[in-house]
Length: 431
Image 1 (tube, rainbow, N blue to C red):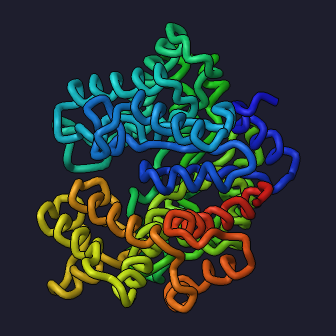
Image 2: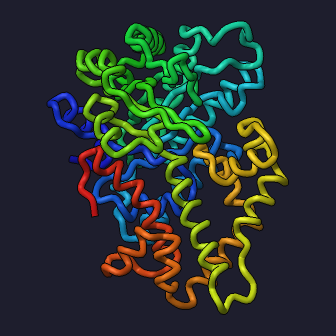
């Protein structure tokens, strides 16, 4: 099997009754990317969102070609064959430009999709479900319009692939978006609304018709998944656990489609058994991102606390303070998400499950403080007593001789603990 066709293999296994899935690492954090490569024994699926990476650089400063290059360099660094790395694009569509008229926003979305495919992206999530500036503000965007726009983007992807020389197989497409929208809607009983089966059937049929109107019969054969809401989500402090009985109708419905599985977003913070049950119930592509940067942040904060306790420390890195200062200097990525008193907002900036702090690690002052922290703790082994106090699971592995007592290795292992749950859920071999 060509490793790049792992998505087709997951579908084949699902349709034969196997509990098989794949985690989609949706992050541009270099520590997360490196940990994902190090902890996988199979194909690694790494995706960028339209806001993280686009033709203008996104909030990471990377274009699609830059992102592919960055991931490839990390793979080369650890001697991981590039054939084992699959790159995808999440929510590719007009979302970053939705405040502009539809024609202009869609033209920019076409450029984004074209650049992604030419750079070597294989998995393409088409999402044109958002209203643009001149769409009616009175109601959600009509699904016929959304499907038509998605099909137009698929046409761009097909044309880009036909004229490219990336050496990758043809794109595999994911359609649909979360229902309710990203962030979730809390029902009266304290649970999330699960996507109705009739809505999924309608999405598939309308999108299929839109593809065929564009002459995309072959591309439709490569639509592999539909994004739905199986009832999993998280807020600042709350986690909505997967309840299989509530999604049973969705699970049975997709079994009637020979070539389709589900893609579940916001699976972060689910237990490993809940993740396993999602895969069993055909939500076989598990998106994860903030849970991984949350683990990264936990590890860095723990190391900062260790640093502050060192008896010989002269000048601490103050990385936590640097991160807080960066967030206060530019509140655009958190202010509309964190409400409450100033103290409650401060708590959320540090410890919210939505982990809006992930947007601020690339800030130069934060990077400088992080580098200083790692340098300080790399000079000598971290005292075992402090390791036991602040990173007890990693302490145990250090004592057992399976983990190096070094700051970067400790961070990677902390992130790897989350990745291990996804590997278990997806039926993948673990280190």
